[in-house]
Length: 77
Image 1 (tube, rainbow, N blue to C red):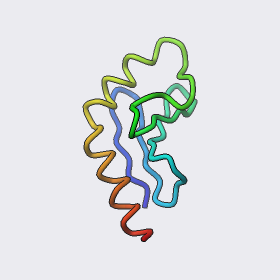
Image 2: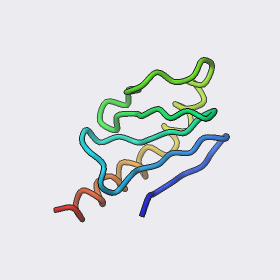
Image 3: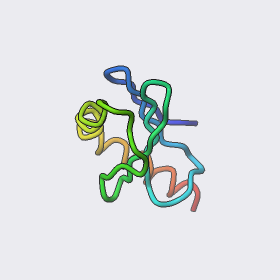
């Protein structure tokens, strides 16, 4: 089951069988970008004018997103 958090028109998703590195998918303005959960850096360029809002919401939910990734990783074995 995909874990999702919605805030400020953003949707953060962690997929259960996703590939390394640990990351979260962020849907914004019809596009998707990824943020590395280890470095806290964008893996894709966000749409113009959205970087700040994405990072504010990401920082707010980072701990929960990292925990979801770890839980999925533990389930994968």
